[in-house]
Image (cartoon, rainbow, N blue to C red; front, top):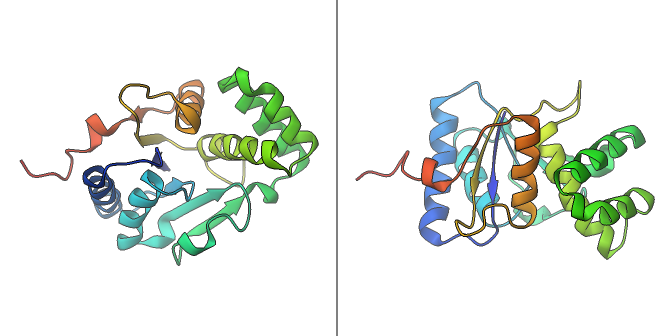
Amino acid sequence: MILLEGRREIPPEFALRARATGGFLAARFPRVTFRSGNASGSDEAFSAGVAEVDPTRLHIVTPSPNHRMRARLAGAVFDSLTDLTEAQRHLLAEASIAATPANRGLIRAWLNRPTGPLSAKAAYLVRDTLKVLGLPGRIPPATAALFFVDPADPEAGGTGHTIRVCGIAGVPVGFQDHWAEWTHES
């Protein structure tokens, strides 16, 4: 399971390269599945490339069942945080706090009240944790992750949170300085 994602703001040149990379990986490795979060920008670009080859190998994890419904790719598999048991919610919340301790209060608030504006922000972080760790017996963990990041601050925002979860889980990561040339002809 390869996680494909990154920042919402992605220059058009890199969006094309992310799409090409998603398609390249899906074609080159026909038994590999891919995961993303259905966000605009990097997630959308990588996912479009995978979907061009085989959308059934794309697993999308969303914070809610109706997250970006219009952007959903036909054939992809979808899961959302609303599908979690109480025990799974607590497991993912603790892992999220371990990766980004500054968000402890935000994530604990989500555990107590999973609706509202602050809980919505926490849900994105918990969703990002789920994308990396998976759930035993139900959602396989990521084995590698490719990101489009802000080179000046790769660990900023939700993307940075996901990168930290990968680090804790031992999931190797690559940024655009690694993958952007895989399909680009010099």
